[in-house]
Image (tube, rainbow, N blue to C red):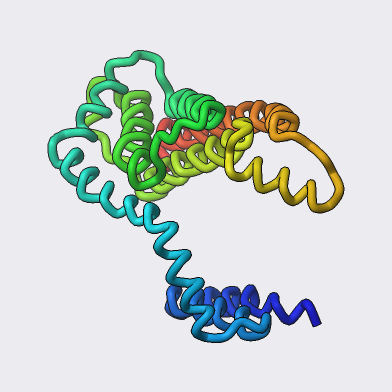
Length: 233
């Protein structure tokens, strides 16, 4: 009967599949889990309120949105594009691979660069797009308009490198929350391992992600370039 406590997971899955209201789905899933676990409605609401208050720092994320809008309206994107256009021989694949390396190193030292809305959308993607346009049109890069497919591929590639760097880089820092969580879970199962050992074991995976990601960036960049040079836009 212990499995009944996983009913919350089932409710969340069904809620997302049926495209129901996200907040309502999560609250109902939490309430259902609490009830089958012997926690009353009032106690559940107390726990929900305490969790919200203790984690309210997460709402700081919303403060970054107007700041990004102000920065973009004052030419942040244009300056990033000019910087890329001034670097000769820099391809989109190489630029994204360099960003992946920077993201992995930032994860090693637990440095938070930003994320998709704060950094990738206003800076990384426009710079990758500028590198592609410069490769294809040279000095006439500003007059070139990429087709929808190529633009979407560059956007997804920028987002993918952010995800790879963040996911595989954060566990190389021994004080990362994910590392400490895994150490605690392994300790409960009888495996005594230190955070340093787990972080060290994450290094090979981070290096592999850099190599594989770099190769993927290279071939994807080549594919888009070939599409234009071959006249298939």
